[in-house]
Amino acid sequence: MITPNWRPLATYLLCGFVAGWTAQGWRKDAAIAALHSAAATQAATAATELAQATARVLTLEHAASAALTQRADQLTQDQTHAKTERNRFNDDVRSGAVRVSIPIAGSCSAAADTPAADGNRHQARAELDAATTAALGAIAGDGDDATRQLNACIDAYNTVRNTYHVQTE
Image (cartoon, rainbow, N blue to C red; front, side, top):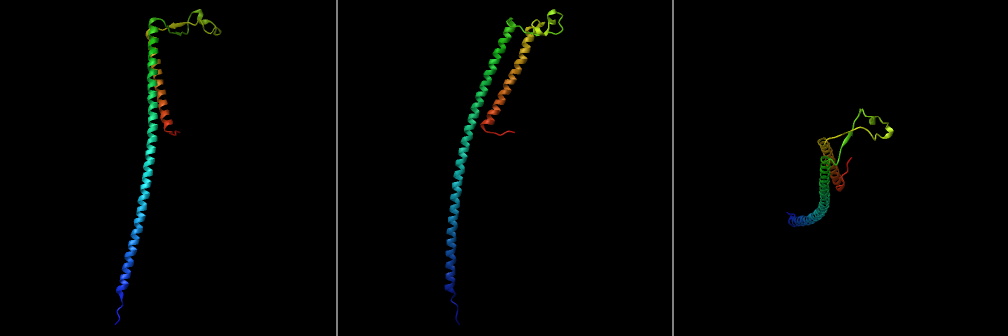
């Protein structure tokens, strides 16, 4: 009986399988190394872009902060100047250097009946006392302060919007 010589065939098949397995491993190792290299390159690029974007944002933030600080300082100066002017006005009213009056209607004087062509030069007027003038000045001053604060708020909003190029609708 002739027995097939299967041992050399099995040896060849086993060697071929091992060689193929090894070659496939080398190919996969090379592919994995290429993927790792590409991922490392992309990570480095992303890190660089992130660092650049962060630096740009920090620069913008610093500029906006400086502009807001400058605007706050300007508001403080404006408020101080306005308070000084208001105090000077109140001192002048109390000393009599400034007199405040309002026109009155229904006057019995002949001056009140002058025609409009005269420009009401002789219109009857009532002088306000110092306390009333101070109270009206305080009301006007509070309104002016609020207007200055609101304008500073609008300026701050516009500064931030323009610094960061925010689109609003």
